[in-house]
Length: 277
Image (tube, rainbow, N blue to C red; front, side):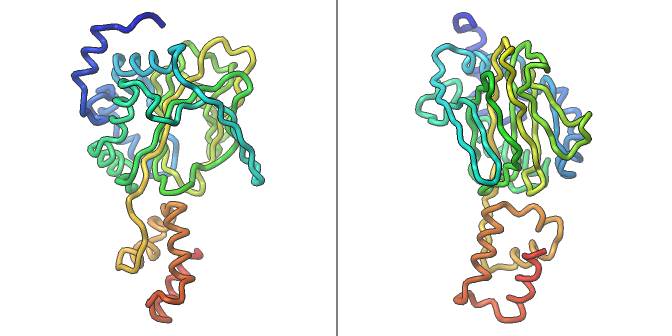
């Protein structure tokens, strides 16, 4: 994609230690009420022209580079889930610019902003990595409900992508005619991760002539359940209970199965009943 742009690099260097609010397109910040409502309702949010053009262009150049150290990832599971795509998970192999890009998503102010927007705890570890899908690559239906994940982000960086090439996000909760979101350039997809956030990436066509690129990951919760008032309050609230992460739910199950936990018979029975709803 050409040699490094010195002026672009200088502008990006000035964004060191920036949160997501500093690099989002101002037009996105003006429409947050709709974003807030959709995230809290469990819908997928699609933000077009999401980031400042210079920020998006710099990340695209990194991912489109012939020197990007992609590695193949493919696996299939008994529950029917499977995937095939390329990634760069080892951050030691990332460029300085790519690490700076991840730092924006991992910034403490970004986590606080997303937490308030989605009404989910995003104060834990943030994860993220580049992805590239070639012809035949795909990701079968899944929810992302793994570990401590609370809010997912998928930043599309596919230039001149055509819908007939596949590689689209398919949001399973929507009617079929409104469920497909084609890959594009500088489009940010957000959704709250729950047991019902089912989606998949459609297979990339062998006719695809461009690169299907993303930078994607998850914000995660910092809360681990223990014997405290918050445990009771969470299980008694149907909305809070529905937003438990996979690890939190497993931790609660382990606690309630542990005979050495001093919960008292009545409280134990009540918490057990709530946890199974």
